[in-house]
Length: 142
Ligand SMILES: CC(C)(COP(=O)(O)OP(=O)(O)OC[C@H]1O[C@@H](n2cnc3c(N)ncnc32)[C@H](O)[C@@H]1OP(=O)(O)O)[C@@H](O)C(=O)NCCC(=O)NCCS
Image (tube, rainbow, N blue to C red; front, side, top):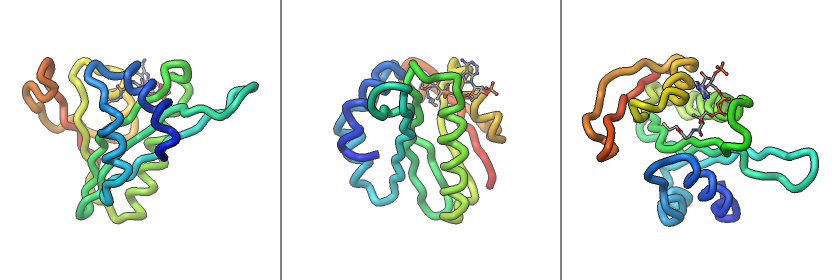
């Protein structure tokens, strides 16, 4: 992800989450030395490349925390999140990560199913994590 991607990233972010990240939050991640931020680009039959989806994660002392992942609503259900997650697991292994964790809204069935498909387990609940909803903490041992 680069600064040039942020207009498109923010559009997807706002279409994806009830409490979307701001531009300043993404800019902070681009400068953060422990942060890995990637976009996956798609090339429609006609026209220029677009951001299909993106992911933001931290790697600290062998632990990875997935902070954000979203796919452009126009391109959902076509394997973009799976591809992003698969690539990130390769990146994590190369960076000697032994455990990955993330928080997900209890109501987010699509994301919970995506993570289960990649072997994450539902470890415990963080009560009222989002202010209006609990989070499930999901964990994957690499
Ligand atoms: C969750 C999200 C990232 C999935 O992206 P996607 O590119 O559509 O996902 P994929 O096509 O790679 O699907 C992978 C798996 O996710 C799950 N999944 C995706 N969409 C789903 C849906 N609508 N209902 C149930 N499961 C779904 C399935 O397990 C699917 O595997 P399958 O195709 O073998 O059934 C996307 O819906 C999104 O951006 N949602 C809003 C943002 C968000 O909730 N991010 C996660 C925050 S924790």
